[in-house]
Length: 185
Image (cartoon, rainbow, N blue to C red):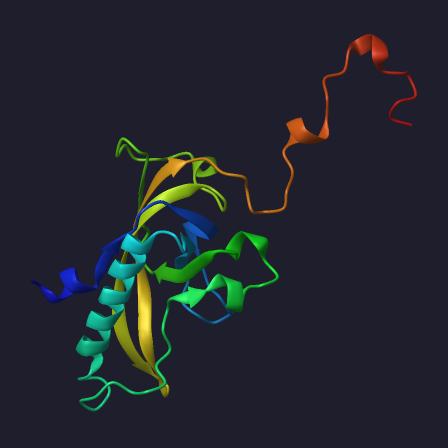
């Protein structure tokens, strides 16, 4: 099996959060802009979690050459527990999460594998499947395994995580006869 096949994972149904998948952004001023996505994996999806853990292990093995021939004991790893690391964010409850990014724009398709061009279709809160690739890194004394964002397949809508309400939730239809003349004064 090719090395990148050992480190590549296509998830089951996950929730997308912090979906910055249409335009690259720099995390901090002076950094390279990247596309990024936080992938919320339900703890009940043991098949995806098993694949992710195996791919991380393969990336650790591949990283031995970067890390002096052995796996360091305190590596930074990409798979994190939402119940522990994000207890103040209810959408992370019962999930593990991965932060994935890429300098290249991810391919984005619908459930029929047709390209999605409407940027409003893929957002923080919708559900999808995501392909990622895990890789070892050794930068400025930081050693670990990173998660590269590859492609996204949207499979279902979900409640947006932006905190912004929809107009149809804020307003009801108004009959012109119900609007008083001084309505805007």
